[in-house]
Length: 202
Image (tube, rainbow, N blue to C red; front, side, top):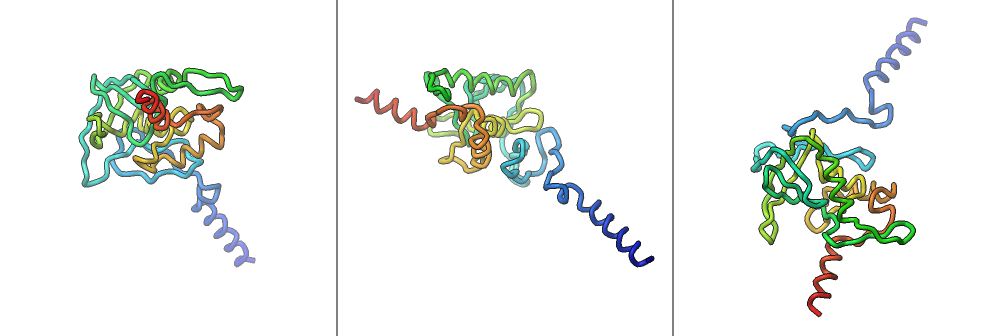
């Protein structure tokens, strides 16, 4: 009997030590703020990618301050415009379709969603470089959360797969749950730009 009691107490102890992993794989929330150490990308059932773009030993230029949404993938931080790295949102003039095939202004809707995520909060951006047009590219966060990840996960922007695979899992998450633009039909912005350029050149 003492041996059985000991084994029961040992089993309970092991279950307690297993904690969240035993309970279904939930992980502890990421700390808020600009993030010191890099954080592993979450599985597709994770709410967002924590904002931790700076790799130890590889510092990136940073800008921080009052932020506003210029487009669904473009923010202005203290007047400096930064394109969100790894995503693409509908362009000005682009329309999408609802589930009932009704057109709507998805450019404005996407921009408004980014504006909602920013709110009155301070925006911090780690500048990764410039695109071919000289536009600054950066990973930007608010309250410890990656703005690009929020946009893709909730279906208001697409993962820009030609630039980075970082947000592909979050795009799949939004698609399977029919979130945001995925509730209807959206033409990938890069395809929209190519189509518009072809029409202009006719």
